[in-house]
Image (cartoon, rainbow, N blue to C red; front, side):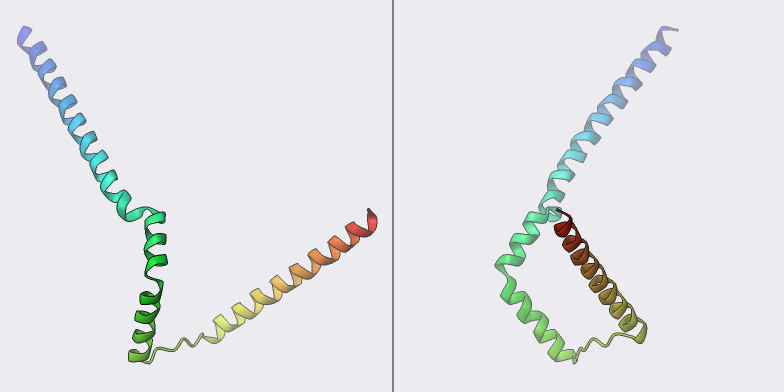
Length: 103
């Protein structure tokens, strides 16, 4: 019976040790990933290299003769979105005028 208790204690210690190792590994991985996933880092990179990125994109478009031609469905979607946005803006202006008149 004593050996069973020792085996359980040893297993518990072993598992606790394993858990602590995994936690330290997780923290190290999180620290490593912060460098790549931090939005401030990417924002700084693009601010510093804005001209080179634009130039690289322009060269790619020129070399591949890239042109964006939206499909008729996309054109309809864009036109509808613009119409709804314009309509909403006009309604907001009318409501503001009515609120100003009521005050």
